[in-house]
Every structure is written in structure tokens, then in C-alpha cells.
Amino acid sequence: MSTEIANQKPPTVVNGAVRFTALVEGRTNQEFEVSSDVLVEHFGAASRSDDDLVEAFRKGKAEIMAVAAQSVNTPANGTIALGTGDFSELTAGKPGSSS
Image (cartoon, rainbow, N blue to C red):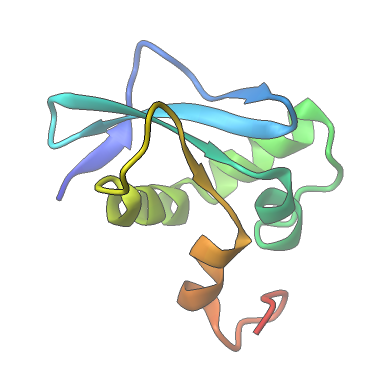
């Protein structure tokens, strides 16, 4: 399944989370947000400032998009939130993970 950032809407920080729109299978737009906890704990954001959160998002974009692709069928009215639990299974035993 092909999932990528929708070009018309760059990732932005909303209420401490990075919100982005993904283009799924080249045709369906779905909004997601990655919590600041994920960006700090898993992707190493230096702080919870908007700039640091967006930078951590950019560095972890490939993994974030993989998790978004797995979550795209989650029933949701609007934005799908991606939290620490969504990333912990992928990184069991990795330094910095909660496992």
C-alpha cells in the first residue's frame, strides 16, 4: 500500500502534536497526528518546541508513514492519532524504546 505526505498540506504542529495529511494509494487523503511523546521518546526531538517536533517528524518520516499505512483502516471521524503504542511494537529492544 502506497502512503505518502500530501503535497498540498505540509506537516504542522497542532496542540503539541505534528498533524499531517497522507495520500493513501494515490487517491484518499487521511489526516494523522503524531504525539509529542512519540517525537521526543522515539525520534529524539530535542524539546517539545514546534521546530524540534517538526524536525523529529522529518527525520522519522519513513517509519511514521509505515505506521500511518498500517493505521489507515482504523475507524475514525477525522484525524487518526498515532501514539507511543503504535511505535513500540516496531522497535522492541531498540535503544530508547519502551520495551
